[in-house]
Image (cartoon, rainbow, N blue to C red):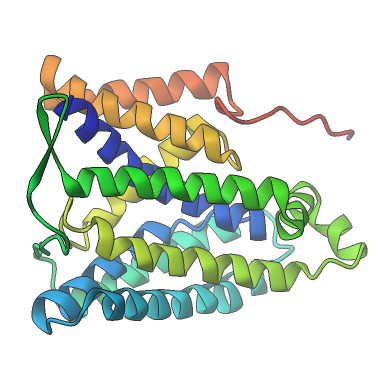
Length: 287
């Protein structure tokens, strides 16, 4: 039971990154590869505000959300919007560049060493079916499930969600029908960035605050996104849980080195056999 919970918790962290990718993809048609870096920025805000200055948790979360939300606004306004209509992979390359800049800024202020941030809640273990689990693991799983459910409801049951789906399918046609695609894009980046800042302080006790962590989270989050299906929140959550369990049980039974090999072999097979992901859908388009 304990290994199961740990695997689901690790997968949930990857899933939270992938769900952040989904937010910007649905709102702006762009996968924000700097999302993991914003989450790590939230972790360092927790280190600075909670561990160093002993600020209460609500203040830590508010500061992290405001800071990362402003960064998200700057990303969309100055990095993405000028590239609208550009051919090739200009937006992808730009977001990778933004991620590199964010990592550099973190290293300037906090260095490259990892910092441990204690869990804000009770550190006591909880017994479930005779096995002990950590409170932080249950919190992270709950955050992933809760965020996936909220995004699923917003996407399928609200007007703003249906508008996002429309612009994802055809941004130009959506604009011609009066949808403010630039405003939707801006809010998508701001909300996704603020969510990343909110989650960083909550999950940092499971990991640690380190600038190098963003690359691992970005890659694993992208793997989860592709496996689950871009735009599919339920598929992303299922893929995240699967990847987390593969890592934990793979490390136990075949060794920690081979667990990543298994993950990326699975990633390659899904790309070959089910390129739309387990939760995605094929789209036919006349050309």
